[in-house]
Length: 244
Image (cartoon, rainbow, N blue to C red):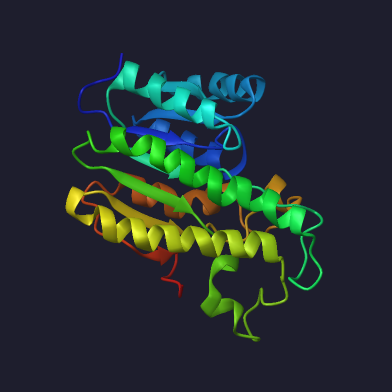
């Protein structure tokens, strides 16, 4: 049974990687963690590991490519908790066939956008009624430095050589979603930010990243723990503000 004053957070794609680390850290801080994952097997396995650290965790089946599962997740959260305080849109994909815009296949770009943008938008829209019932509602969008048009246009930027159009463009679109949501939801007291986890060693990059998952989770965890919600409509990493 969750406490009335306990913050309730839904994290999509939280069965592994950065999402699981965010879930772990927030569970340790006595948040009610709703661990979203499309695979029941991997989701329940992750819940089993988290339950050893905190009893305040639940598995929420949610597949960003399945609108029915998204609707059912919202109904489930409404029925058990009546509200949602924080939505962390963490789930996302890459594709080994992603490439620069002059070379990449259209189907590859569509597939990436289907999850990273359209799925994230669908989850956000489904959860908005529940966020509106919170005293301190917050949306945290997991973006990427690769989604920064400002940085991508600088040839001296350390990641400028990564011309993965599908992934980069999908994260740039997430940033636009953040900007517009922050503006349109400001009067409803819902804050919205984009974060760059940094080049973190996860399945997404075949563990080539130089950061640990704890470092990759730092920005999201910091925002989630900031009950004063001092930032809104911004794009930043754990260390600095970033250009859109």
